[in-house]
Image (tube, rainbow, N blue to C red; front, side):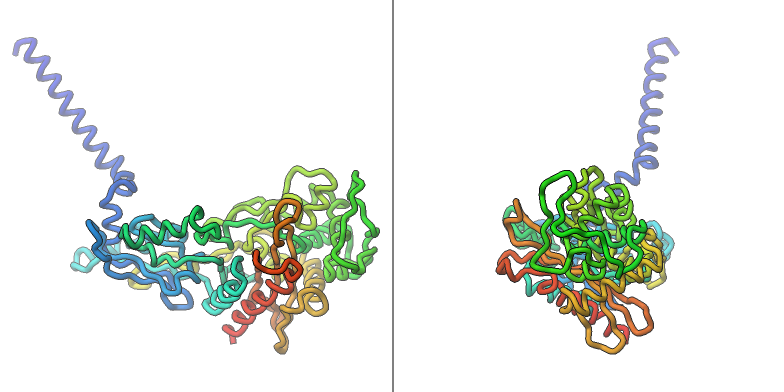
Length: 496
C-alpha cells in the first residue's frame, strides 16, 4: 500500500474509533442523564403514559387519574386528578403535564410513575408477563379529620396556615394553607383550560399568592409565642428554677443601653412577676429582660435547639426559621419576645410546642410514612428520629404547667377542651406587621393536648393573617386558638 492510501486508511480508522467511543459514551455514560433530561419529551410521555400511583391519607387515596383531553397535539395519555385538591395542596403539591410537579408529586415522582430503580424487579416481571407498568403509592402520616378541621377553620379567616405534629414521633398530622388552589385545574396540557387556570394563580395576577405553601414556606414574626422559647432558655440556663419563682423584672423596663421603655399591652401584673404569671399575661418586660440577661449566645443556642436557623425536610423543604445571630443587647431583648428579626414558619412553632409536650425531646418532622410498590409491598418505611433535646424532662414539665395555666386561666381559654382527662397547654401571640406596625398584626396560637394517661397525641401552630378584621379584634386567643382547638379535638376523637 502506498503512503497516501495508508494515511487515509489510518485516518478513517481513527474516525471509526472516535465514533465508537462517542457512541459508547452516549449509551453508557450519558444514558441516564439523557433519559431523565427535562427537554427529552419521551420522559414526559412516559410519565403520563399510565395512571400515576396515589398519595394516601388514612388508607384512602386523595389523588387519582383520568384520560387526558385532546386539545391540539397532546401525546400524554393520563393526567392527574385530586380529591379536595385545595385542602390537600400543601401536602401533595401538583403534577401538571404543562407546568411540571412540586412537593410530594415531584419528590416521589419515581415511585408514583413506576420508574424508580427500586421497582426494577417488579417492572421486569410485569414486562415478561405482558402487564402494563404501574405506579406505586406514597402513604402519608396526615390525619384527614385534623386536616379538614384546619382547612375549614382557616377558610373562615381568609388567610393563614396550620401545622400539627405528633410530639412522640414527629409525624405531621395536618398541614393547611389558605388561600389555596386546586391542582386539578391545571393538571393537563390544554392551553385554553390549564394555561388560563395557571396564569390566574400567579402572584402578579392574584396578590394573595394561593400557590404559596404558608405552612412551610412563609416565615412570620412569631410575636409572643416565642416567649415559650425564652422561658425554656431561662430554665435551661438556671436563670430561674421554677414557674412560681419571682423574676427580677422592673416596671417600667428600659431596654439596655437605650432610653426606650419596653411596653406591655394594657394594665397587667408584670412587675417582678413569676414566669407563670408572665406567660399567662404575656409580659413583654419580663421576657425581654430574660433575653437581655441571658445574652444573645445563650438565646441563640436555645432557639437553634428548637430548630431555628435550619431548613427542615419533611421530605418537602420548609424554609429556615430565623433567630438573629448578630444582635446588640436591646435587639436581643426584642428578639426574645418574637420581634426584631425573629421569624418562624408555622411548622417551626408547632415543633416548639411539640418539644415541650414531649418532655423536652424534639422529633424530626416528617409527612411520609412509607412508600409502596404497586402490589402494596413496602419499599421504604420512615422511622422516627430524634432531632434535639431543647429541654430537660423536669424543665419541660415546668413549662407545660405554665402553658396549661395560659389555657385554663389566661389568654388561651378558647382552646380549652372540655372532656374528661384532656389538658391543653398553649401560648397566644399577636405579632407586629408592616412598617411601624401599621398593618393588621398576625394572630398566633401554639398548643398541645394531653390525655388522661399523660400522653400527648398532637401539638399545633396556627397563624392567621386577617387583613379585613378590625385591628382591635385581632388576637391569637380570639382568631387562632379556636382553630387549634378544633384540630386537637379532631386528632383526639380519631383515636377513640
